[in-house]
Length: 149
Image (cartoon, rainbow, N blue to C red; front, side, top):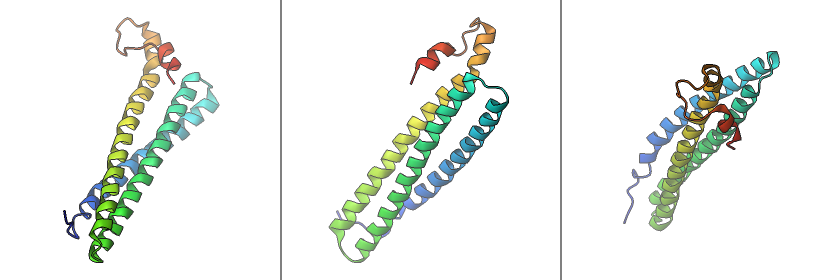
């Protein structure tokens, strides 16, 4: 299979959108961590600590996603260079690795989304305790959530 010089460029728009999305997520989470830290200083609560731990993990995952996405973009650009220089086999390998990196970044984003759901459950756990589980909204009790790594 021979790659056209425009083939690796297909990834450019995807990379741009992913970078915007994950930069926004990163900024929102960083702001939330600062807010929770301020609340913790005023009124120390274990829920704040748990939320900050999960948010900190998410920030690291997002940072890794961004690094992988940028690496994918770089490999796509280098792949175009090798197509131009007529080294198709090198270009194909680089493009393949760029695609694998994008798949990896998307997989990490699924994990980050699942962590965000867990963090939301921790946020709502105080409500669950106040209602005495009479409505069963949240599935797990806050004690079960705190046991989960």
